[in-house]
Length: 473
Image 1 (cartoon, rainbow, N blue to C red):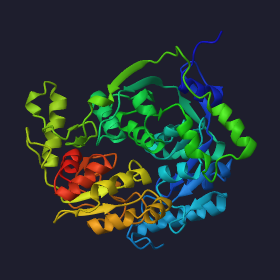
Image 2: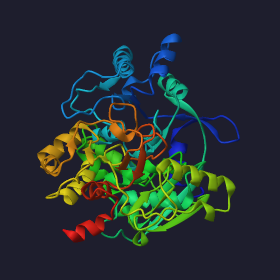
Image 3: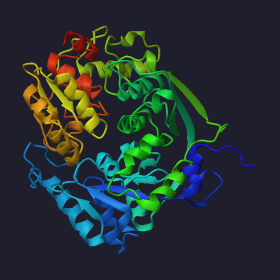
Image 4: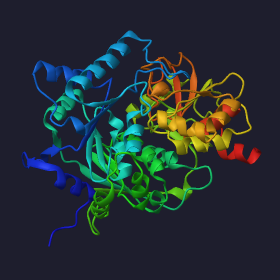
């Protein structure tokens, strides 16, 4: 009788080409890869220099998402010369190597981790690798995704395999139910605060429990996306009927008999009863409150009713120095209340929170209200398809009437690689995944939170508990 296996074991067992040694190093087959203009150029140059071809061009999908402008009117031209070269080189590489490209003017263009799921390009049981750490997003579909470096992208394109070292397993069980105003972003931010930015280093995370089961597929994507901010090299949930319903009408999902056979296989994708994990963590969703970061790392966070911590209370000298540096950069004082902290910008977007479900939640908060004076508020949908759907549903009209900029899709202000950049000293409420120093612009200060919390801050002109704003309606 075979020992019970975790879902991670099943991913690896079904994709191992060969075991390279007794230390957990494997040659792993990869089903899909997603490419962008920013992380792929060196990989393609390496293929050209070695006169190598792409082994399976149809297993790759390329998008333009990092450097493109997101101004309300879409144009093909890149305002930055370096970005223009990256976009042109990606187009050339896709033509020469036979890879499908969603360029800036394509109706399917968008952020890679939004586009791939909405196309049905990622399916349960697949192993996916890409040159972006947030490839973990695909775990919400019952796939196993992880980020890789440029040299690995080249190896993957040439061989459809990667040398991979088996990781330890961490199961995060989330019991209870989320209260009003709480969303999946609060779950994953609370987890990161609890275990730390390096708390899952060396692990893959399997999320489970009633609170996870209750989430929509798009909400689960937010959880898996941000798991990497705790150091995880993979994050996933067992696929269920919600996942299958989500995929059923996607353009690249199987059809007919192939769909029925796929369903039968996908329903086996779960950890066996009695499977052992290297570590277990439990959260109670019913005890959570809306989360906000105060520092320069995603684990430097607290509930919106909390206060900035005092570094003097930290016994560890290294951690104390980190806290002091974060407070200096963020321009905050120990004991300062998070609620009421003035902002200059509000940004809703990114591969973490720019799907249609996120935009619907924002519309509920802002309808009939106006953005506060002195706040620049932007909404950047995760894909052109999401944008079109928001237009059809009337969400865009609500955003514009409230004073939000309604823009085209792209990574935008998640990172300062395009023309959506904050200035030194700007303070931004952001639905993104990282609040590192300079992430949104040199000297810019970022506070992470859910899209609804960003919307509430934009209306109030300062950080605020969205639940309080709802009661004032």
